[in-house]
Amino acid sequence: MDIVILLVVIAVVALGVISGLVVSGRRKKEVPPPEGDAPTTTAPPGEPHVGEEAEGAPEAPGRTIDEVGLPGVTDAPPVTEEVAPPPPVEVPEPSAGRLVRLRARLSRSQTSLGKGLLTLLSRDHLDEDTWEEVEDTLLTADVGVTPTQELVDRLRERVKVLGTRSPGELRALLREELLTLVGTDLDRTVHTETSGAVDRPGVVLVVGVNGTGKTTTTGKLARVLVADGKSVVLGAADTFRAAAADQLQTWGERVGARTVRGPEAGDPASVAFDAVKEGTAEGADVVLIDTAGRLHTKTGLMDELGKVKRVVEKQGPVDEVLLVLDATTGQNGLVQARVFAEVVNITGIVLTKLDGTAKGGIVIAVQRELGVPVKLVGLGEGPDDLAPFEPEAFVDALLGD
View 1: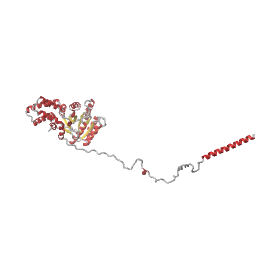
View 2 (view 1 turned 180 degrees about the vertical axis):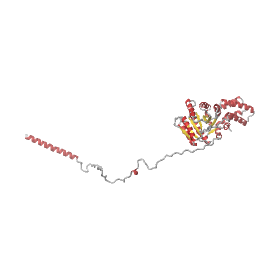
View 3 (view 1 turned 60 degrees about the horizontal axis):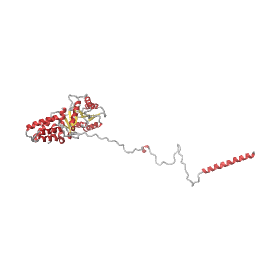
View 4 (view 1 turned 120 degrees about the horizontal axis):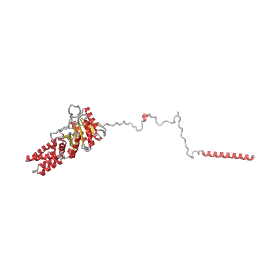
């Protein structure tokens, strides 16, 4: 028994010695190798605690926030947007005699009519074939069937009575007959004076189909009126096209005329009403109202035009309603004119692009169709190429020198 106990004690002691040796060996393995055998690592210095100062001097002296500045901000002075100065106010040339000054431009396209007639009438024998050629020449120039027949009948009678026909006599004869057809006794004044003692501006309504140059004509008419010493307010009642209001305003700024406009796609009658109201408040002489171009076949749009006129008339009568026609459309322009005349009371015609067509006879035809005179003609793209219509200058342009 004692021997067994002794053996257990010896075993326990042996295990203890062996365990100590193993632990000692492990600790020896964890000891770092001697200096020079392997690289050593150094732990980073500890962070300073609150109240302590970091070791070493700063790299540079500290700067204030004003000295540092903000990212992306430079010391350059602020850039200010330049506001474009308003365009200088122009002084249009006087309207009196303007058609005479533009006669050369008109005659370039119109002399084929006059020269053709003079050539035919100068023949030794004026037979039926010649008179048919005279008729064809007049019809081709859009004089119209009825006026053509009247002119040919009078020419046949007077040539027969005249007998001998020198070039000078024929020219004088033809000039006289053409003047009779064009009409020298018609009132071609653009009425801008109010009737009676009513203290309000004259109101001019400008109407027409798309593409006739209506807005441009309104702007040019403003120049004509300003040249005649009148103050003008423009009403941009074409609310379907924002560009129309911008264009009209540009025309007005060039002659010092203010433009009254409304929101895009707004009520054109409301804009027209406001234009007359503000023109009255400002003491203007004339209010020009530019309406939207509309096809004469569109009943709804034509009814809207009638509404514009009725709304404006709540402040007083409209003194002038000008229908703008493109002279190059010829007889088709007469169809347009009839429909417009049924909706609003047309008082005058403006023929544009008359310098670009040989169909000057449309002047005679449209006057005969509507019973109203041609008051203004457009003879080019320039700002002062709208001229009061003068029958004598027009006929002289037809016949040439």
